Amino acid sequence: MTVRENGDEVLDRALLNAIVDFTLTHPHSDVQRFRDAVNNWGSTWHPVEPVLLPATRFLERTLSLADAGTRPLIEGFITQRARLHWEQSYRRKDNVVSDDMLNGYGFAEILGQRGPFVSERVRSGLGVWGPSITYPIHWHEAEEIYVVMGGSADFTVGDAPSVRKRAGEVVYVPSGTPHGFQTTDEPLAVFYLWQAGALREISTFA
Image (cartoon, rainbow, N blue to C red; front, side, top):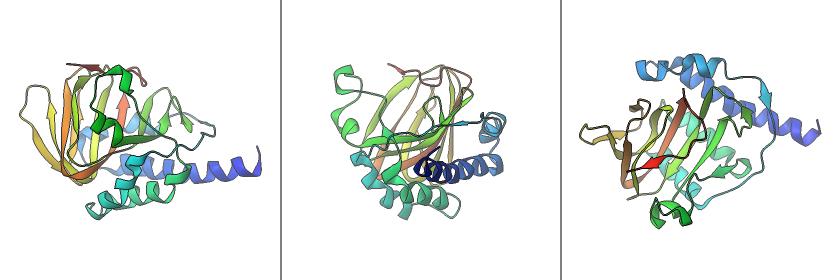
């Protein structure tokens, strides 16, 4: 391992430790569903190429909308923003999400099949969306949790009415359940976890 790779692993591990600690100490019963997978994610690290997306410009605003419990994790991603691999699941040619969403969202995965900490059990990282973006109703095999880090959105899960969620609040999505959200006039940052399904599955849309 080169000196640079060793330094990258140390920085990545700081985010990993923050994610593990946040999950294992979170009091919400739905977050607790993911504790075993996060605590036993695996052991392999590999470097990932930095990719910066325009949506990361919203991170500071979501930080200003965070609370005491969520602020440290956003700060960690802001500090390391330029060296993380920010990505999107959808492409313009897929014609499943709007140009507004494609121009205003992204996520950085820390745990998962594409690392930097490689796991076949769990997928986790931070996602960010700009204001007034619709993430259309979609579904996938894996169960998922969103913990709102900063900002707000109106979440729809299954047949239930949409509910506005803000910093510190939790949205649990059972396997195969249709879900989506609409951000408000604020941007949104969420901590996400997937398990019990194909971790890189492309969602099906209504």
